[in-house]
Image 1: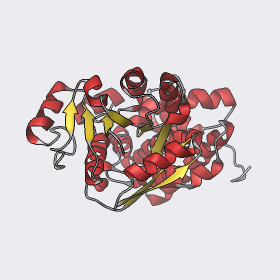
Image 2: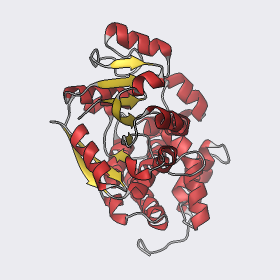
Image 3: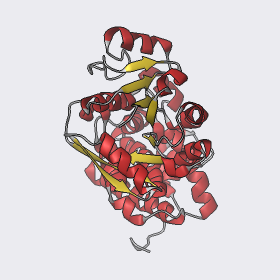
Image 4: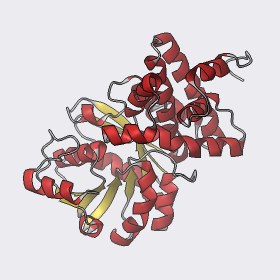
Length: 332
């Protein structure tokens, strides 16, 4: 591969991805939002805020986007989803013509648009953009535990490029031509994970959590189809695979927030400030529900989580609303 690869975002997944690319023998540059983080990586070879156990001393870290993108033949975006639109223009300005971009950020922007289209529009070509999703917690990838994911793009060439570049001894990538379905699954599963966390916080067991996960998957599938995605995506790594690990893993930030909310009623803003972590599902709810309402898709579980964290009603009321819904066939 001519040139290096730029990773934009030095959170847990971005830092781990940079480390994984180093293991593949690639030249890696890493964009950090904070000057201090870039300086510490340059000085010590470790990220002081995220995944500090990883040795990334051979990464070129900087808080200057132009420096990170200079000479890069491709880029991977690992910012929170709400920050993707703000870096899209910088990618277009700094990357060489035709350089492909892969998003680790999940799903939809705050206005309900697909993040891959946001970046693609800035680049002038959505076929240059791919979306990665799957059951991939950074904490386990950093231990070289065998994992897999799907990389989806309108272009077979773009998906195949990142499949070759990112796959390694313990990380297996599959390609997909469904970036829409992959994007929706990646965003909506985080909301379902918040619901499962709430159930745990209330002391409810595996039966309830499995019910919430399965019905949440049904909601996701309805939205994927309505948006023109492939329903099979919901049964793959980006769908049930990512949903399962996000709902049940101890590493799930969304699940941990749901559990804490059920016990304390803490707001998203306060939780994120205390934990220095983003609750992606909370930021995804509004655009998901906006798109669902536009298309007439019923998503009662997602809607209930939205109303709960927005303070519209309490958990007891939420339980009554969900359990009191009209009985119906499972598949209709």
